[in-house]
Length: 301
Ligand code: CP
View 1: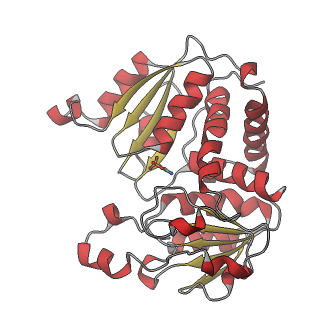
View 2: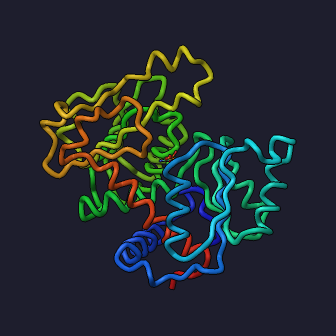
């Protein structure tokens, strides 16, 4: 496997290999040595967790990082193309981790360079490294990925994390509730793919009794930056707000997950409950991204 671009490219065996390596690296990070290797973090869009956890992952394995943090102050401002920027980064580094607002940007970059490319989020399309860390988090919390019930809540139209996660869980016999305002429902092409894969799902506009029925409540931010019309965002921005009170009927081991950042969609009174899992989830990003870097750099046995 040379690149990590989309969860659609990974079968169950490959996913399980990433999970096993992340678990092993969490216990013993010293087993992999990435010294003499350089990771280029090329971020055309804002990020806190993805960029910093990749940097942390690389540095904790002994590697080095060069970073483009937004386009301000770079030659993108002078009109340099994505292809040229990528080709130059490939001369400076051993692996490119790229985030870009354009869907398909990471795959395009992978076709321009000879080194591994990791998609750290391409527009509203995919965020595969987030999904792998989500799977690792779910596995740690529930002990298995098989046959779980999950509610994916919020912006299912523009939220790339939920698009990737639906594909990531598909091999493990999940049952999904897709809860969103009608205008932000899961894209039809993803629903078609899930139907072909015989994945069970229900589309809902309200949470109703779902909280008491699921193993994972995966909450997402309404993606303000992707709305063409600001008024449309204002109509739906507070569509779902998870509070501690709402969780009273949850199963004892139910976990609330969120890729973060959150805005209003999870009240801070949830943070001190046993259901809050989003900060552990963020930490798991380091272990999974170590596994991804080691694998794509050919250092995982
Ligand atoms: N989850 C996630 O992608 O967070 P950032 O946008 O902060 O990287």
